[in-house]
Length: 296
Image (cartoon, one colour):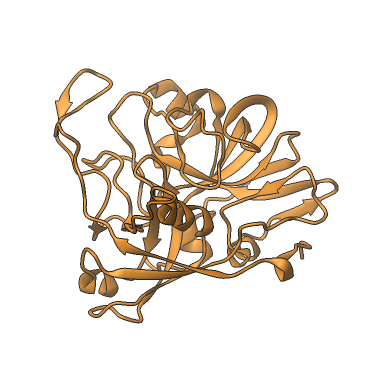
């Protein structure tokens, strides 16, 4: 087993409410081919799109699987500081519990974070989705910020519950760590989200506009919840291109029509010195790893 500092981590409560779908001032999105389109987007309770489903092929743009949650508390001292804390402290694999009537007591799992809109994304069973309402509150016992791999100082871990790390089961190989992933993606096609100075919240997008690249790297079968490696990407202090670096993340939202966008990835591991070795495993998806679904 990997040695970690799990016994030193703080478990702390954060809470959000199920967020409504939203549109900007204009309802049209202009596709990379120049076509105006109107499509479902961020927010809401998505009944028929969950982790484990394909990330591409939907009539959708940035649709978030399962349940989109945000903290709407307005703290005048820190702007939207409560929602920032909700996003930073929530980790992939954390348990989420509905605390308002209707679906009170139902449990789900944090599956990712979406930047820009600053939502925390959660998966619940279909019977719970049917009971949830916009505005329902969800409690997360946030656990994972500060997690370290004690024997791998060149690998940073972020946004990950120790339970999910254990279930993912990466294997030590000398001074490197072998991590199961469904795909290896070149940093050259990563888009929106570049330029952020931290990777403890949010995501950045896989651009899928080049058909030849999609075929070369087998990206048409990307699924929501897939654990993927991004080659030549360093996420130690933001997201940058660095030859030889390797980062690993989880796919959090669907494909997009807008230029520079695509399925989003929230970071889980990064090594600026390439101490991560991706190992292809078609089952490296949170729906399989945590047994959230039995139909895939």
